[in-house]
Length: 626
Image 1 (cartoon, helix red, strand yellow):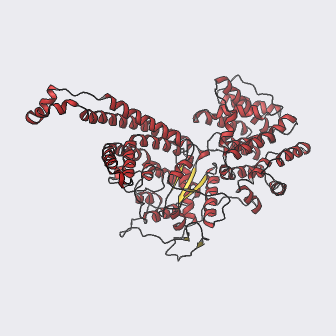
Image 2 (cartoon, helix red, strand yellow):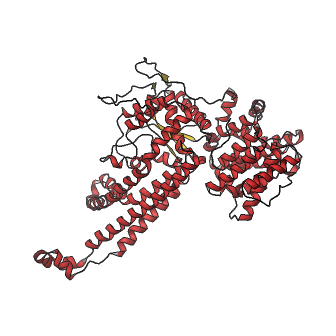
Image 3 (cartoon, helix red, strand yellow):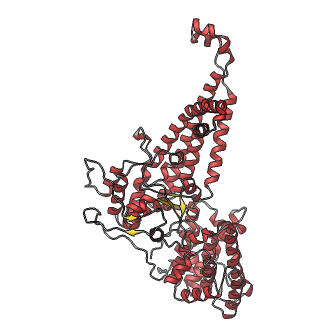
């Protein structure tokens, strides 16, 4: 099984292959464009028709050598470049953009619909198993086939979408296996590569898509514009015919890059939920359903889905391996049925998301018996706490309370500041305070992760207000300069950073615009010193842990910083410098602080939560296990 960094290296190789294939495709399209338009706009052809008819094309070309039509080449290249850049920038916003284009509807975290709640629970379980942020969840209500996709630019703005058919026709364990498959794409970094792939293929197939749009517009135009519609029809046919070259090249590029990734995603899904039979059964159900009708958006995003969305006329252009081979990888003894896969009837009554869903129970011959899958340990979440964490505006009360100090006077001032917000009421605050007192640091950290979809549901203005409210609470600690335990201050600051990460734009307020080697060394020294102080009580042990880390990671000549007072703003600036580093350098830093914490061959709960938090903030998998 490949680990995260091996997969990242393979993704970089795939990105290099994508660039090469894209350049070749662009070159071919540009050459064909200038050749095609060179023939159309060559006025010598019309003036020498007699010569061509009576003496032949070869004689004409001998007397009139071919002239390159550079304007068409420049226009075609510019059009491809502009559309590719536009599409890539559009997709950087997050996976919600793709979900909306595909007609998906967002599932609210505080939903009361049984099937929606089941889907949210499954996503939360797999997020905990995969040790990543809980993504937003979408449902494609108009799609009856079993399918799903994960999309986004980073782990922090990723979304998972499933079809109505997946909720209707899959058991809970099978649904969990499909969601685990999509989480493997998120954890392995495939979603970022998929964004690049979408942008590249959209750019080279844009001419054909433009022709399809003009054709659709001409078909729906009013009868009073027959002449205009006729012109549009001719233009559409020309663009579609010419753009079909780009469409074929786009399909070939997607097939060349994506097919092998599905096998790896299937394997990782089994690692997350430990139930290969459930994934195999989900594939069998998907194989028994008809594929959806051809759709421009589905064609464009076909490589994102759990199962192929259409049957290509040549198997070499398929973005997914044959479904039978995928099943046989999971169940080696499986043989394809001679009469084909049969369609399964609904497991649940899912009436357009409006009526109460019910569960139908089938005989053993209808529903396969499978082993129990992984379940997330969320028993510490009481009904009241679960209701608060899944309600977007209750997060205004719950999340800032995780940042409150233990000092009585300071805590009183922070609570008064919290109650001054228009979204916080004393009744909810009392409930949250009583429930949070029962949680340990690790459980509080998981609570912030589970609140991510709720926070993301807030409007932009409310997200900024929540971020500012959290900052005010933390700054009250810095300004008061109370000698609180350093490990408590660091953990609370990490909670704040994760909250700011979830409010996206608010985090960018203090990001460094430039970075240099001196700043990076200072940041490395600062955090390694912090971990050494927190993980070891004796001053000599702290120094030895720091020196050993410097020797291990070739940072000789540095001395540990004597940190007596923690400053949240300075720490935020230093973390911003580290977040902007490439994956390899971020991983080196994470390994350094892990080495420091484990210098005494023991990692306590506070250190484990701290390392887990740093891994999440740096968008890396945590190497520390429970």
